[in-house]
Length: 137
Image (cartoon, rainbow, N blue to C red; front, side, top):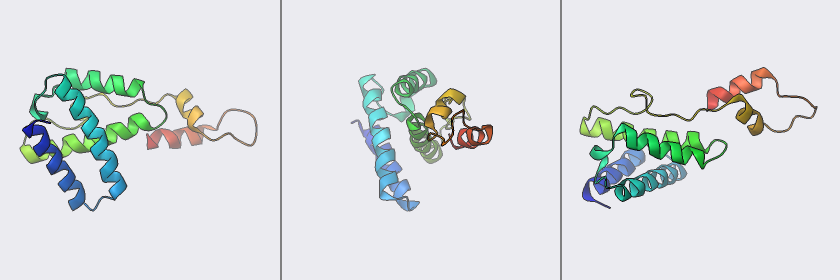
């Protein structure tokens, strides 16, 4: 890992610890961010300042396609936290999604229906349950 990425990751972990995040939250956010960093380094991006919208859009699109259920939303939340901290710490003009229009996971009604537990009766889930779930994602 390059020095700019190492510094950013160290600051991110320190910020999470300072905010008294749980150990599982820190582990999940660090893991998602490390995977992104690995892909960025493989793409020749030496630090967070080198990441631009087209690269991040492609990366998130690939990751969303390979994840099911709430995992795209979890990835989005983890990386949004990283970029929010990074932009605040280093004073970049870069803001976390959705302020810059970076891609966010979209969940269709059909996908939400698949995430609901099977009802005791036959038929589709009621609309109130779908609206509630769509707000969680």
